[in-house]
Length: 162
Image 1 (cartoon, helix red, strand yellow):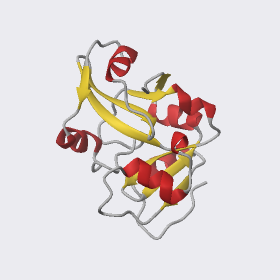
Image 2: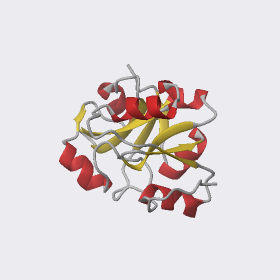
Image 3: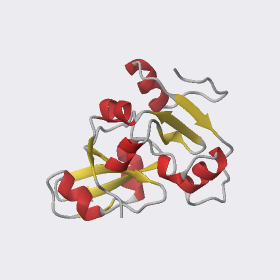
Image 4: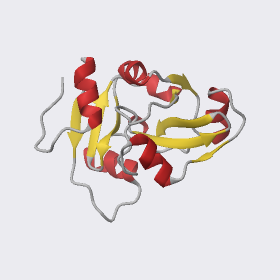
């Protein structure tokens, strides 16, 4: 179950605890000068970048969608749109992403979002026993099984990385 930390739990941590999901909170000291939040998490936590996933919000012709890809990959927007039955996608404006998710950029978790959105997890996540995603705050990641992430977010899996 969750490891305790000194900070107040985020909405993501609360949602996982309520769902009875096994997870570990992996906190680290966030460097305010860092702009590549996922790479920072992988480096500081000593985890291979292919196991640390970033949550990105896109605007598609069928609405806003979350794409979750490894931090060492780029999101294929066309593949994301196709996964949800759309044709086009662009990255969401950061203000829209913050408003819809309830989290700040660099700390957007796919779990416990203010507005539940269609979610697509890159299929490479299934190659790992556990993966890490943002825990809802910069400097907080959550480690859990990909199957549990799919279950709590009602995600589908599809190839999304390029």
